[in-house]
Image (cartoon, rainbow, N blue to C red):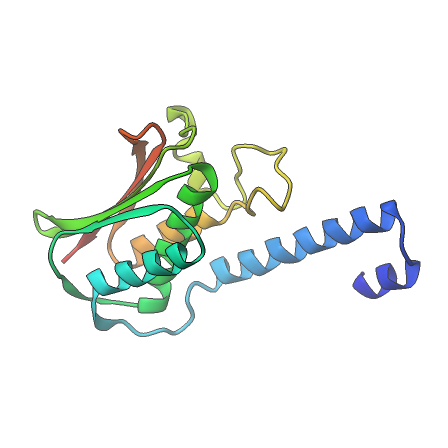
Length: 185
């Protein structure tokens, strides 16, 4: 398709088709990542607090407004690349819809709780489970530049569940969404 588009030359219709093909490529790439999980990555003992801090630092370097609060250190067996993708997807969503992001982590009972919050418009209660479905987007009119493929939360939940955990969506006291990740120790 790209070869045929290249042979068509320039024009508004061709630009629209190229944008459609780019969006299709992005969706297929995202789906393949989702479908194959994280391959054969092995779980290793890691400092989860450091992994969270690294994920937040990467977003801060790119200009994101993020407050980070980690209560202590916790070492656990995780697939670091997979769980890094989970964190990255949650922070990306929070940053896409809010102007400020809050990331918190700490021990709660016999597990670790990580929350990622934003001050965006929030997610209606009746849509909170739907946003975890692959390719589901709340705003179907979004363009590829402002919206994702609808895989970020599906992948994040899949990764959390693969580690014996869960992700839930709630209201944030900051006005937007709180994604709560619970992982067993």
